[in-house]
Structure formats: structure tokens, C-alpha cells
View 1 (cartoon, rainbow, N blue to C red):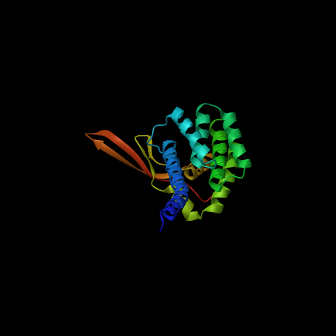
View 2 (view 1 turned 135 degrees about the vertical axis):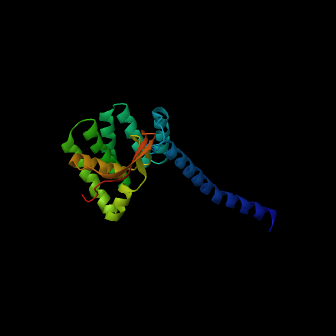
View 3 (view 1 turned 90 degrees about the horizontal axis):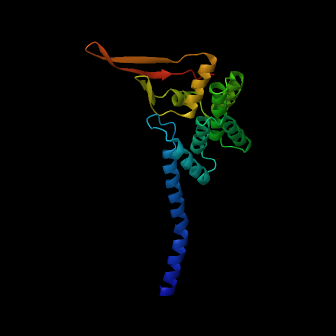
Length: 208
């Protein structure tokens, strides 16, 4: 092979490989931002200022990113910007969202109407819309596993582990319907003093 042909082959190879490298770099950056704004990691303290900055960067990289959307809604709610948070969710629903983003937006609306606005009749409407999408996407056994997996326990009245939107959705549905979960408890006692208390195997109804 002549030097000219060899150099031409190298240039073509570089052009082919460059987009792949850029894609991998972007994927790594998205994963990094997702970890930084993962508000559902119950063992991670939320830094609201940095969360917002990273969530915006993540959204710019991936406009349909559910983790970025969730973080920005929770940020607005933390700042008591409820009107803006509701508008953000409703705008997302108008723009042909992915299934996961639609579930998230409906859940957030329901949660706001229940917890911040005390309009439970509207909260139930949005909860049911979210659940109808979940039921179209997942089989009953899959829903039960997502909701009632052993990812979250309560230790000394503090939740630990990692939750998810579908779990939170069914918890909210149970609250609105007045149905309590079942659970097991264990208590560690030392010298007649309670050292720790744990609630685990928390099960919520999922056959709505």
C-alpha cells in the first residue's frame, strides 16, 4: 500500500471512529449527571443548588431524560414554585413524552395536588392516569416486583435504600384510598434498651 493510500485509510478510519468516541463520551456524561441528580437514592443527601445545575445540563444532553425531569420538578417543589412545577409537568405531557416521562409527569401532578395543594380529587385523577399507563407497559407480577421489592427499609424511622416512581405512585394511591401496607418489624434490644428498630418487607397493594 502506498503512503498516500495508507494516509487516506487512516483519515477515513478516524472519521468513522470519532462519532463513536463522541457517543461514548456523551453516554458517560449522561450517566455521571444521572447519578448526581438521582433524588430517589434515599442514602444520598440532596444538594438542591448543584442538583438543579446538573439536572439542566442533563436535560440539555437528553431532553426526554426522566431523571433530569424528576429532579427539576422536585427542585421547583422544594422552592415552593408549585405553579411552575405544574406547568412544567403539563407541558411535558403535551409534547408526546416517552412512556416513562408520562408516568413521571402524571405522578408528580398527583403528588403535588395531594401534598402541596390538598386537592385529592385531582390527585386521584392523575394517579389513575399514571397507573393506567403502568398497567399497559408492565404485567401484574412485574408491577408487584417494582413496587414491593426489598430495595427500601425503614430503620429507626429513617428510610434507607432506593425507591422509584412506580413504587411512589402506588404508595400515593394507597394513601388516597386509605389502604395501609403490610410489613414486618424487628427490634434490637441491649440491656433492656431499644438499640434499633427496623421495618422491612413493606408491601403495598398493586391490583388497582
